[in-house]
Image (tube, rainbow, N blue to C red):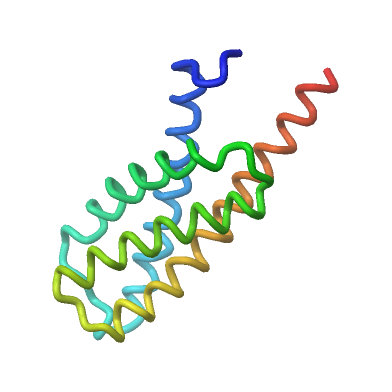
Length: 128
């Protein structure tokens, strides 16, 4: 398969979208824990859209890395850029920094699992 074939790009996009959807669901639960962490209705759709776009672009630059490095960079890029956006939207600094850490941890765990499974799948497909 060509390095950047349409089918491959669509597969990457879907993988990133699934990671971001799971991340947004867990983040929704985290925001529901405390009334001080409540966010407006547009927060999660924006997170899904921007997170997917940022994640897809980041993945294109890091796709040759091992799962651990890929997950660290992927999670940091999305977390940092989303939190910069929220800071400029007027969220308090404490909120921004708290959720920078929470978002990074959630994304790191989910993306590491996804990228590791992808590595394992590639290993098995090469052996067949």
